[in-house]
Image (tube, rainbow, N blue to C red):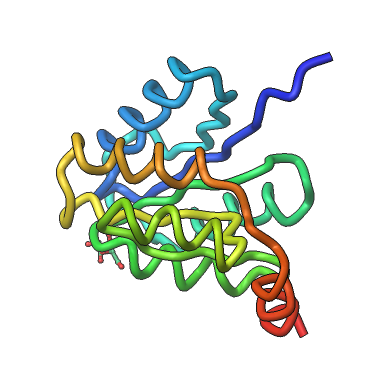
Length: 146
Ligand code: RB5
């Protein structure tokens, strides 16, 4: 019996290299990375990839999701249109931890044109290592769903 967390990853063309670095990093740290691409560098549309990753989380196929685009903003907006998804853009580790602890975020978004790889990997670690605190925060998270 394994409790390895399945993490879906996707991006647009602006963040392919960083997404692949994140996938390798989390795999090395014991997570199962489900990287759904894209692989080739042609310009593409972030809503397609945000929706596809969000669907994997919303369906329960994956535990958490990480999406990336140039700023992290567009793909976050697309992911949040999927029912049950709570996705935040983070450029710092404190926020990455708090969106799990207080907001029960199930997806993280990062801007590949905003943060470098070293910080991005620390943001990912902060997100994945933090658990939702529940309690009063659960009331508020439930209100978002309602
Ligand atoms: C693509 O040029 C860029 O607009 C996209 O990656 C993202 O930054 C949108 O939010």
